[in-house]
Amino acid sequence: MRVLGIESSCDETGAAVVDGEGRVLSDVVHSQVALHAPYGGVVPELASRDHLKNIGPVVRAALAAAGVRLEDVDGVAVTNRPGLVGALLVGVQAAKGLAWAAGKPLVGVDHLMGHLLSVFVRRGADDAPAPRFPFVCLLVSGGHTAIYRVDAPRPDAIAELGATRDDAAGEAFDKVAKLLGLGYPGGPVVDRLAATGDASHVKLSPPMAARGSLEMSFSGIKTQVARLVAEQPQPLGEAWVADVCASFQAAVTGVLARKVIDAAEQEHVDEVVLGGGVAANAELRRRVWELGEARGVRVLVPPLASCTDNAAMIAYAGAVRLSQGQADGWDLVATSRTSLERKTRKGRGSR
Image (cartoon, rainbow, N blue to C red; front, side, top):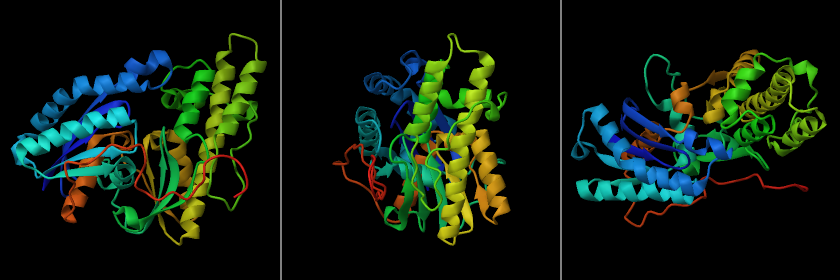
């Protein structure tokens, strides 16, 4: 089986060809970072227009790199939820046209399912071993932060154990970077500066660190940083900014690492998987690995190319659906809501 995957949920236009075993035959990504950087975040209308401009060339490049024609693939998979609806629409309509023209089945894929299954994508020597079901996954990205128990590669076999009540961790990284004048996207630059700073020089309270709860909150630590910045003379000193990055990153990654390992122990599961763009953060990887080793939990992390948004994970998730005899009709819609059941209630207040 060979599946063409299309991803356009946010600010990357991606297309990939993957076989039924998860082997990546091609994976092409067009990034919109330079387009959105002047605004400090993703502008939905600009994202949609850029997807529309680039979806055709990216798909053609993916097919060419894989050495296949459209008629050679066995299905077309596309991200249809969740994400920016205008951006999703571009990918969904392109996938419908391609599938209809080639007489191939169309498969809609939940973007979160793609991240949850990205550890099964085979890229080469840096691949993590494939986990056994069930496993616990920490999915941490710009738009989503949650811990899931994964019993099988189906939405009805995936249970949310805890999630953020407000900002996702990636959003918090971007907002803190903006407060510090570091530009967009914030995650990579905060990670880089944190390595040169001293976390002990700036005191930040860990976000929602109470033991026993697998829920998370990142808006409070962002507010702490905003207050620190307001109290500092301008312009901010480079050493102080590095110390803030180190303290912020240590607080966030420490809580994420502890909660996902706690979740594995509570669920009596001995394997943990990291997924999503923030899984590329060096300190998060280190902390989860170290804590997992200390508490007897095996930690599996996909290569960086599989952590950030990509079409290979969408193609693989689509191949799984096709192998289960599933496909969608021409009435497939784009929506901002995930198909996974949510447990954590957003906002403040008693639970």
